[in-house]
Length: 308
Ligand code: MN
Ligand code: MN
Image 1: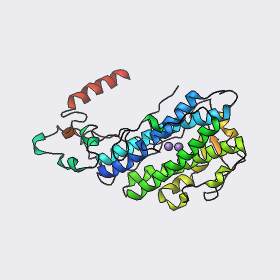
Image 2 (image 1 turned 45 degrees about the horizontal axis):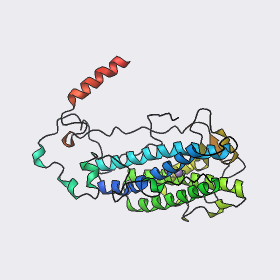
Image 3 (image 1 turned 90 degrees about the vertical axis):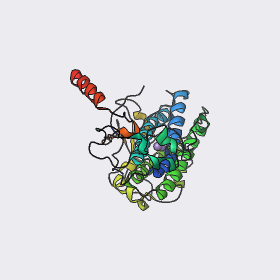
Image 4 (image 1 turned 30 degrees about the vertical axis):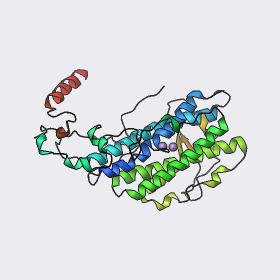
């Protein structure tokens, strides 16, 4: 089962400007071959399909707990995409009616790369890549062979790192950069954890291949605060009581990768504190949440008071 918490895995800074083409670039991290939908889909179905769960508990728990973090990454990238599509929010922007639609208030949107992000999705994110191609099941590998699946997951995390580095190099906006910086740190943890799992099973020191691609996190300014707080040494169970067995793999006798700030690896029970989720205020001229939403707000406010 899953539980949901109304917070974002890390807080994102507001965008400097509306930049739908930057949002389109960020879509690669959501619906691209190595995007968050792929890591989520792979680990989720591998954990559902896992054989001999009790006998292989540390390995099952690793894939199962990281699944939950990947869902939070899907949420993070989706929020980043919507924030870049919408730009900085103006005070009370969703209060007044939408104005005259015949004045082509959104003419600029016909020129953007992923026009459907505005036309169909109201500036939100969907599981497509940076060219608008749909994410699909062909990106999911779940063979039931533990070594093969873990090896695939290691490859997937290295591929995700490559995506993130390239997207990072294309976006100057603080929102997009924060998404990349945070996910680079967490992706490095996941690649490291799958490498350690493979080492425990085979004796091969796969973690020595990291980082792949070969650039240390210290070169990316947005990674620094996460490195300073030790995020690169932390793996979460994402559960109040389950999946603690991951400490057999992500264990205290293992240490951070050589290029990162030193220290032992640690398992944290539960989930990260996370940060505040953005409002994503409506744009009445785009009919979000509608052209004249005041009546909705009034109804919602009455219902809220009743629920207290
Ligand atoms: Mn991820
Ligand atoms: Mn990952």
